[in-house]
Image (tube, rainbow, N blue to C red; front, side, top):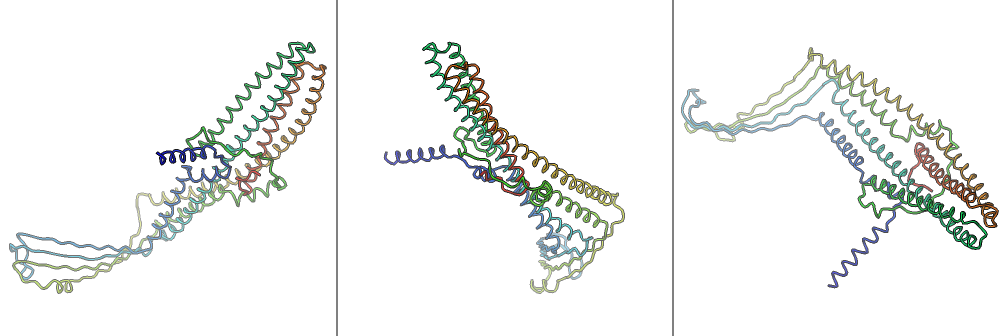
Length: 442
């Protein structure tokens, strides 16, 4: 019984710890990269590329095969001495080894090996690109939760103020200093704020579910992130010119590397296709022996026959392509077109990167200006609200106008939260192009 209680307590402790766990951005990114299906699939593609390289290397090695045959014949057989047909039971054992080697095939083996090295690099670039994009998506979802939580805090703080005003207004109405309409106005504001709080709580829940789904977690109810007070991080990235960021992005981002690699692979595919137009020279060697045993004839001993019946074979084979239904030349044409296509794709990738960097740069600068403007507006609205509150407390301002002032302050505070996280994310996107890790928010 004690053992059962101990197990139950241990299980409850583990469960409680799991429920209390709050994820950092770093933990979210690392977990996603370890468990995401697209990442796992890309890792398998990399393994396949490495196997393909082994195939390409194996093309340089000679083939080696062994064979053996053991047979019995009962009935009409040929006398090995007189070559007459006789009825007997004979046994025959033969075996050998053979080897072949491609000496020259238009350098296709060489080009296939070089292409396989590029394919490994392409798979690695693709894997790293998926990880980068996944990190960006995780950061966006993480920041969305933070935004929703701060938005809820703003609304809850406004609720506290309104509740205080409700009590003060109620006392003044009962004393006859304010009309009852002011109390009804405050009560209506409280009902509106309660609805806003419910909507904000739902937004937090939905944003948590969204991040949990990106992480492939099933426990949505207990999933949560660390509630740090994230501030706008200091950065010097906006002091860089867009062209400097573009230059850095071409070194750090995998979109360009993938396009460049694909262009090189296409060039080697063209070389391989052209190699099929050239002759192929192959060499081969074979060794064999056999043993024969008959009931009617005396045959030499096994070891003697194996030694006496040895045979060696050497051969050179030259294959010259003359006409094959245009298939080889058409394949060359297709690969020539593909080379041009990958070159265009590389040009487009460079143009897209430049466009994206300029867009990210302008977005970050615009977001910073919006955030700074929101801070100024909040400060002004806060002063205006303090003045309205003073006038309302002495009966110089009615409840409707006071609520209008409070709503404007609430909107200003919400705008600060929105522009803050919008700026943080856009700043991180710009830093992302500059090669700065996206996992650190402060």
